[in-house]
Length: 629
Image 1 (cartoon, rainbow, N blue to C red):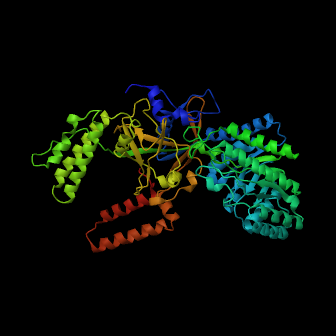
Image 2 (image 1 turned 180 degrees about the vertical axis):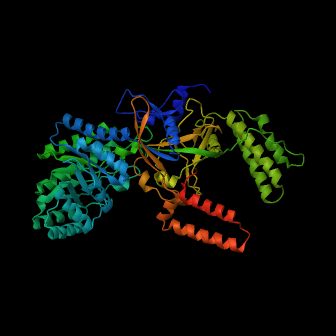
Image 3 (image 1 turned 135 degrees about the vertical axis):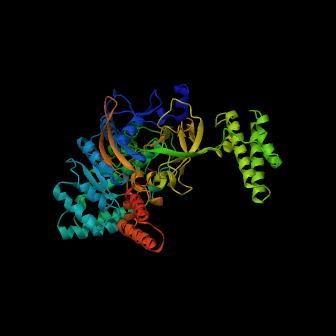
């Protein structure tokens, strides 16, 4: 089909949501741009997938792009630096990455590497995450912020790490946690570096509203805060309290919520300082969001501000409150995770087969068929744009009546099969006459019930858990043939045996749609689909639904000439590895199956060759991938 760039852009809206990282090449391929090299050749993503396939790295596949991650680290640090300079702010910025957002070693290692020039640190919310943080060589001024519920072991290691030169801050979440800190201080004789988490009353909008406000899980109310200050004074440790942590929220859609929350956090900082607390750092937690849809709007999947605007609002608000109170400007800390790592990864999978809800050919009704079959077959004779709704109504009525007759035993299997095939042919005719989806809401609703199902080689629950759990939207698009108008619409079904295992909300140029414009498959060429900007949370929140494990993973770097370098490869889980996660020993499974085969061989007519084939087939499953090979 002829290339029509304006039409294609009006379908998928890649330029709208692509963040300057993803674009469409003239040949219809999705391309990846290297943001660190503005004049670099855009690299074809299908070419990358084919190249990786030749190396034995097959889809489904998670692709991480190092330059996307590096650009995010550079971007947030430079944006804060520029905002600080414009506002004549006297403090500095120190970012930390929350390890919980993506704990994968390749990700954390690169964040530490890319963040070293900016003294970018890490946030640990558990003992394993603290162990990860302390295993990295951080910059001298980088911080490790310890959040979450902590026991004595956690606190002990955090305090002792100060002796190694780490700037490890224990953020007190409750008065009870202070008691544990005091016990460990007495035991070790080492003074801690402390922070205190203060609950803000301001609540944000969006999917993560409950992470903010005075009903949020972590942090202290004002009366608890005062009791902690008094106890630290009593133990001669108030001088150890250097940081105030006030979490603004997560994926904040509206920049005005940022301003209000930062203003409230700054007021607490002023009052704590007036109480004699020698605070030097103001940690504003997370909040900086990603515009997944490209709408630039304050809703669950978008934001109405840029990174520069976010940083400017934070700096200006803190600066104003501190100047008004006559207090020195603190070091600003944020724990931006989603905005740092979200854009760096994409899930690639191939379409395995399709269930099509129309048919290009149709059988003729038999003379003995019920008259409703003939009535159904005659709809194309009067089908027109003016009678489109009537045709849809008739097709639905005749099909439903015939199904009722079949259930009651009045018509047989073959007659019902002819009726269903005729119905699908009628729907193909109707779809050709129907205007584009989005013109008539009533017709849209009826046609959306008849979109195809494209069965794809991935597990929603393993690789895209937020899509299932909280209706998080990620951009989804075919990776090829975007210079051809899509001729079908579909929902994407995964290979789990669960009706929830599907994607049925898609970001398009004209808004969110319950179906994806997509192309008819060419049996000779693999058809790939990409889900973009999944670097935050999706890798570590996935579950083992149907025991599908991790996909293959490839970390790449884009070259200036349009090629790429493979930096790291991680093979996906085998069936045996996944079984071990749910307390099975793969060797025991093999032994049990072998005993069953041997028992059957002695009792039935199984040959030695049969035995070998059975055991080999079982072993092949155990050692092979969990996904379609």
